[in-house]
Length: 417
Image (cartoon, rainbow, N blue to C red; front, side, top):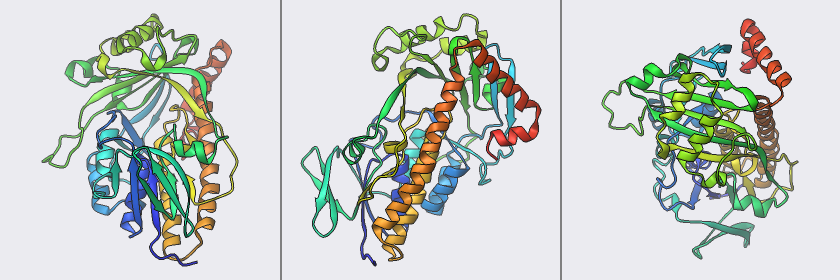
């Protein structure tokens, strides 16, 4: 059972893959990460992630203490509230955040993707290899597995982990029956630099935290502010841009885009959103109108289709590579971090000779499939609720929020506390 020198190979240097690599390095397990991007800054976007208590627990388990402290210092101001409003900014439900101290382990950590990636690659020099586009894997001698790359190179290890995102090539080979499907909803997002004029014009709910807005015709808007405390020193700070971000989503036949969703210009995407906001609050329309078109992206919303466990082998998956979900619950990154923590724990046990590799991976997969696809279903259910077209369904959703707003125990249950 004992394995000396366990060799772990990870495909993909995203949030989950890097968190896992940090944990394995910390516990002296040999690990290498193969990333298709040519450099750490390729394709980076500055929108924020909100790391939950679940995500913090995973980061604490995997990151060196000094790096975790640096991550906390690079996070934005925690949200004061989570607000649900209608398109006229009438209150439906407002949930006060109980913890606003970033040092509190139960407090959220809002952090930009750019800052998070820079932090997670610290100390991994020589472990991350860039410009490595995965092609296929195959069995190798001595019970190992080999991954091959587009440039003709390869790597061999005891276990291969696909952390290569929603379009995972590794998943396509390992589980060709696993599907990702269109939901019929499309989204447009953008951001506005947070200067004094924007701060004054932005609804207070958005300045205080994530704000979810239910509009007519199955339209939905999400907005939040990224702000920072005054930096002391600042020599170790990454991407401290202050801004208001927004996302507007609707069914494809409602949000009329003039081109393929992935190819539409920022200006045309904004025009399509504004066309649906005639009777929305002027402050919300203005937020969209003043957006820098270079920050605008449009994309179709997709989701993975849950599958049952498969026969475990020396190849497994993490994060979006298996349980990709819609963004309407805001838990995708935190679920990937949970995967990293669980897989880190399993692989360290194998390296220490405490369990067999296949047994450890099978246990990890069973647990990950359960909570991962539970998150997929919950996220999809939120998407459907927020984009209901029927008057009765929208009225019922608003009524539920208003009832919860008036009953404190229901608020706690609503947040899952």
